[in-house]
Length: 248
Image 1 (tube, rainbow, N blue to C red):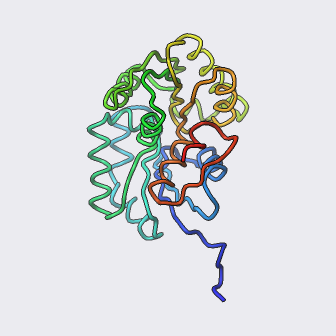
Image 2 (image 1 turned 90 degrees about the vertical axis):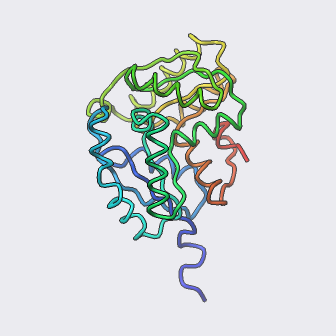
């Protein structure tokens, strides 16, 4: 008999969460990934959307990586679309390259997982919603442009982390749906919707928006669950959980 057989994790995902607390991210992730996938999460403690703040939270990146390696993770995920947007494509690539070089493990980003989903789905024009600043959305457009996707338009309610952390769960779900509906109605030529960031519950909005508009909705948690598990060769498509989670 092997003690723990069929129970112990078969894959461990090291996750650098952007905020000071972990709530919606792990909750949704565990609903989406196959059984026996374990998150090893570290909150980096972002307090505002600024380049200075992103530099501060990633200054001890090697120490953060050491903690994850000690827990025998199989991959490291840079979480937080806002941080990636502030870093811009070249800055994010430098960070991920450094993580991979230092740890000898594969590394990716929640935003890059969303881009992978957009490529597989054949998206050409995308509507965007998030809680970010205009400058961050300008940077986000660079990420999409690099894979041949045009941003049809953006609907954003700019909030700092200290503000949106105070949203109730219902307000979080409703905000993602309301912004998504506004964006898809405002930019009908978009063939998909991107919901930026993981610091809100999005799956209920994803399912309702796909039902209402018949277009795929790419959100960070579903896209990360799908692509990370693909990278770890343990993905199992989910039925009735949206277009991205149904991908093979």
